[in-house]
Image 1 (tube, rainbow, N blue to C red):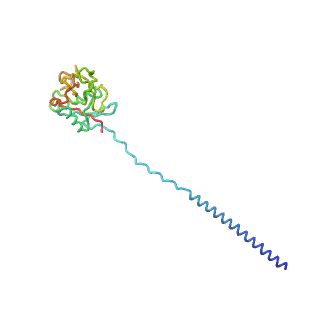
Image 2: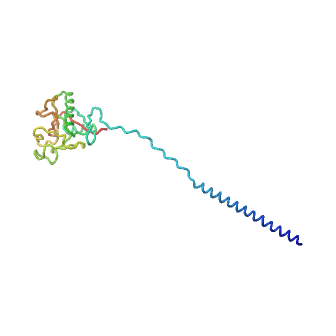
Image 3: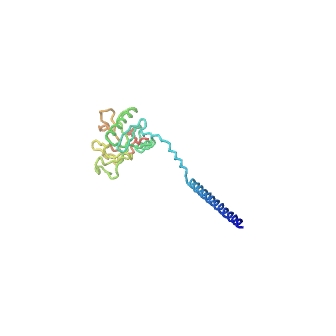
Length: 230
């Protein structure tokens, strides 16, 4: 009887031991599963590096602007300026329209050097078209504040109209010019001599400026256009 009880006790104890061992195994598997899950979640938060954006194509350096062939280039403090003298007998407004057709406007003179150089070019144009004394329309207009002779100093009487020329260094008037000879003379012309070393019309020096009526069309044979380089 005691022997049977002892066997029963051994069976119970052994069963408990086996169950406990399985429990540890279960907990081990649970821990392993948890670790695996955490490892998986860790990998889930790892982002691939973003591809770098392609660089924009290299742009070649822009071509520097320059005056067209046949146009004189003047380097001014406000930038380059292109000038060309054209032949044609017409009133001032028509000359301005002809300049507009060239993408230009009647030009002013930034310096005395510009004025003389344009007058020299006008002489060449005149000689290529029969020669002789001639005048050139330029881009200037009488100031509204100077309606009569003597109301303003000579260098303050006219203003440049090309939108680029500044100052008064390019103005030069001989004798008593501007003289308002024909009443309201709101435009400017430049006199050109036939050859170097000689005077122009009225015995005025070559490249002298003179006020004139804007509607005169029978003796002003040239016009000087100016524009910025393209």
